[in-house]
Length: 317
Ligand code: CP
Image 1 (cartoon, rainbow, N blue to C red):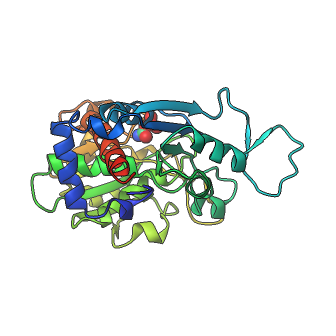
Image 2 (cartoon, rainbow, N blue to C red):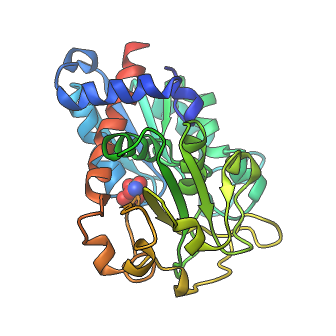
C-alpha cells in the first residue's frame, strides 16, 4: 500500500479484517518492519484518539514518531498557490511539504474541511498536496471528506460484535451545536456500502450526504422507523452538504438525540460513536453508559486499524 485515503486503498475488506484480528492478537510481532523508520504525524486540527492510537500503532511496529501541530509552534502556512504572501503566513505548504518529507519515511495528515470552498474541500486539496509533493507514502488521519482509519476501526468493531452474518447497521444524524464536517459519516457510509450489511442512513431533510457516499444505502427520514430491528446504531452529527447550505447547522432538534426509548425499538442494538461525543445532545447518558454501548472498544480498535495501515505501508517500502 502506498497511500491510504479511502476504502479502495485497503482492498478486500474480509482480508483486512482478518489481518486486523491477527495484529490485535499479536501486536508486537512486526517490530522489525519499523526499525529505523520514522512516522511524521501532521495535525492541522485537534485530536485525542487519532494522535494517541496512531502513535501507539507506530511504536508497536518499532517506528520512531514525530508529531507536529501546525497551529502550535510551526510557521503559519499558506495553502493557496499564486497568493502574494504579504500577510500573516510566512511559509508556503509547497515548500513545507517536501521539507517535511526529508525527515521521515511515512506521513500521516489530519486536515479537516475548512468550509470556505466546497470544491476545495471535496477535491481534498491539502492531503493531495502531501501525496504529490512529499515524496513519501501518505495516510489520512481524517481529511476533508473521509476518516478512513475511523471507518476501518468501526468495521473491525462491528465484525467483532455482530450476532448475525448480515447485520442491520443504521447511521443516524444527531444534534450538535457546532458545524461539523461530513468526513466521518461519508467515510462510514463508504465502508458500510463496501460490505453486504443492511445499511440505512437516517437524518432530517436537508442533511443529505453527497450521492457518491450515500451509494446504495437506504435513506429513511423517519429516525424511529430506521431504528426498528437495527443491530448497530452509529450516531454522528454532520453539517449540511447541499448548496446553498454547505457547512451550515440547519437544526439542533433534540428529538433526534439517541435515547433509551429509541434504542428500545432496535434489535438490542449496540451503540457506536467515533468520539468525542456531546452527551445529551448526540446521545443520552444512560445509552452511552449502557452495556450495549461499545464506544470504548471502538476507540481501542483505532490502534489496530492504524497498525494494519502502517504495517502495509512499511511492507511496501
Ligand atoms: N475519532 C477521532 O478521530 O477522535 P479524535 O478527533 O480525538 O482523534
